[in-house]
Length: 168
Image 1 (cartoon, rainbow, N blue to C red):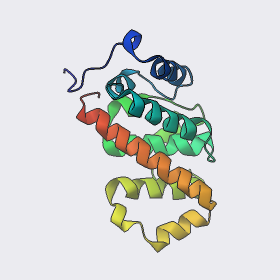
Image 2 (image 1 turned 120 degrees about the vertical axis):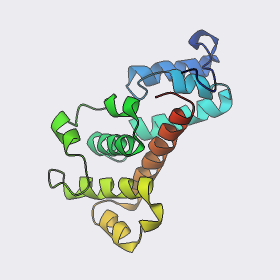
Image 3 (image 1 turned 60 degrees about the vertical axis):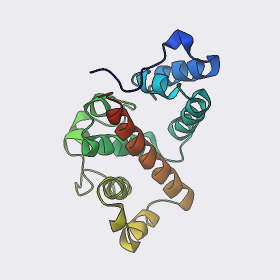
Image 4 (image 1 turned 90 degrees about the horizontal axis):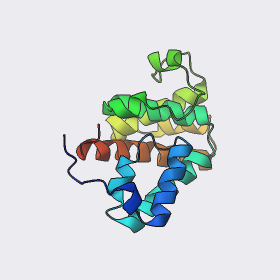
């Protein structure tokens, strides 16, 4: 399938965008350069998007395992095969992935709260009420909740955008 927005060849990317893509591939932040090559149709926006993604990926207040569990749960709910097979962290096992749900007691209370938030943000964000927020507050500090929300929103939105642009 031909992408709706053609990716700009890596060698033709603006130098700062190309360097950000190369770093993102090296750190496993990106599994493929293609989405960023599409964003590069708007180089300033691509640079900003890659910088935000990098900030949340490399400097999150959350542990890598929580980030990866949330990313993989969003990928499963988004039905994104490419995102589901990509691995950004070695802290999540295949056994974890086989049980990936907020109601599985394999996961800590913190992980379950993060997964529950992610599930609701994907499936029914209006259902995020006081009970869900209280559950988050029991396990996360306020800045961590912001990190979780930004991370979940980013992987949800980018996964859907990539699908819409025929990337999966």
